[in-house]
Image (cartoon, rainbow, N blue to C red; front, top):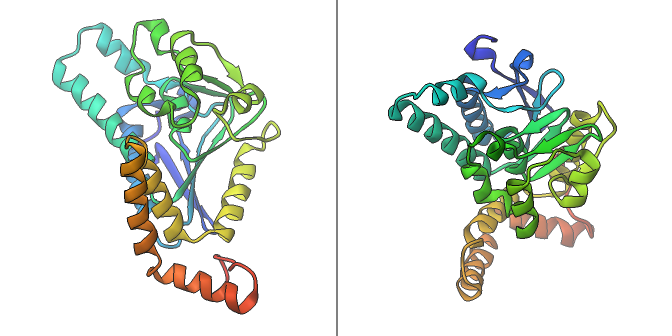
Length: 267
């Protein structure tokens, strides 16, 4: 296993922060160390004004094989409740940080994205898949419960699709993942990361960072509301955001130039 401080590699490509899960010999399982490192890296990216988007990928042949076999062995051996709860809370924290991230998040999926690894991709805003990628929620095949991921899988795919994926687990390739809604775009084999970075830059160029953050927050907040409550809350955001400097700047730029700003270059 790589050293703790190298379990997640971070590099900056222009406005994009690329975070690579880096335990390739074990197919990048969600070990305690990797989960903690990824949570910290995501928080760092959220606080960096120069970062406009985050791309998650995996080193080696796979995106992530999901649960750490060593941790599963401890479950089988009857590990204490305190340790199991800490593991669950760490995963909870990771998914909370990823789902609530203020920047655009993308997953570049190659090889296997299984169980919690599939959950990592599902929690991102956009997913780019390679044809030979394999997506699957396989928790129930070993008597485990996909408890955390089922809470947000319905944000990406219709309820009946989520039910089938969770209860009758099968591996679906990249093309099928796009058909189902698990992925957004299909890249050539070996090209998912480059495709995801290009997509991230393209979106960052045409969108206000503050508007992206506010829109993501509103999507999350209104998901469980009734339509009247959601509409009232949205009206408040509509009114308040009109005073945001980026909104004022964007409107002014459009009126003066008859086109929207390039949010990466226009001052």
